[in-house]
Image (cartoon, rainbow, N blue to C red; front, side, top):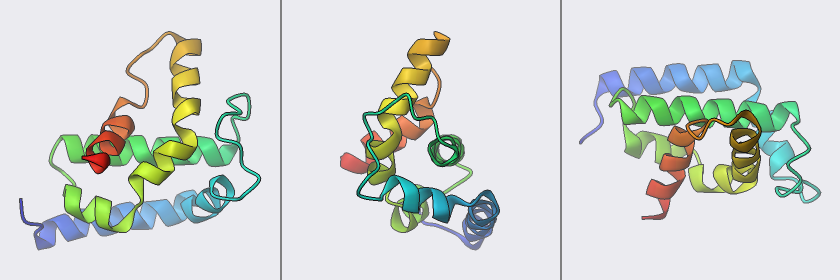
Length: 113
């Protein structure tokens, strides 16, 4: 699929929302040297923001609302998932819901292929 101007419009809305959400600050926190991705007891606002953003982006890509190439060119999806994936799995187990954050995870898997 080749991205269109309509894809760009959706993408720019996603970028705008990421700014409103404070994603930049959240990413700075999870990429900081002292952030421990394995400390799943730490459900900081930064972790929750990254999980919510990644799941939203994954859902939009799954339903062909957002172009994969645009998403993967701007965001380091695999890197984000590597930092918060253990948190997602812990939340799934705690809530007994295996579908939580599945779309974010599928983006990360796709990024490695």
